[in-house]
Length: 224
Image 1 (cartoon, rainbow, N blue to C red):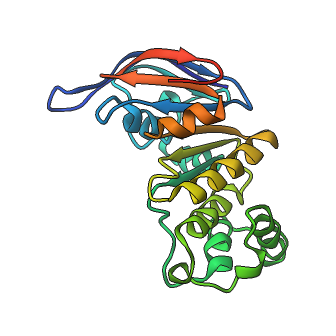
Image 2 (image 1 turned 180 degrees about the horizontal axis):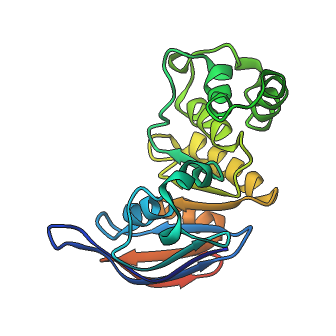
């Protein structure tokens, strides 16, 4: 469960990015967050990642109060979140296998377990045959699949996807959204920030629309 209660974020210049925000997202939900640039979507994601602290209010993620979380606990908390970005953020000098394995190496997973986990994850995203390829040898859609595999390798409870189809054509965008739907069906809570009204309307999920730091619409199952 993600519970955002009466949250406000005011930056130093006095700009209110978030204004008394209230959102609840149940375990296993698939939610789109939409809105124009400057509506507060990015600030919301950064607060969930604990990259930005709210000025006031409370954020609970899986029974953890983020405001009360000591700094030393933040890395462990973030391991329970998977994050996918528009620009993929892959390691250019490492192949597909090494990009996914890296996420486990940094938390001290044994070499034996990595050898078990990485092929399983690459199979899930349909890239088993390309494990030796480097990012510059892959299409945009394939690179995003690698990024998703890396985000999922540590079994996150929540997957945050920030414009995951923003750099992709229609075909690849559809494939990525189908993959996210499959991941959600396995029990992972999926939160997708997007500008694509077409994708939102087609997938018929819950849609939270933000404007000027507040929720202006929260609809189940479809259209913006």
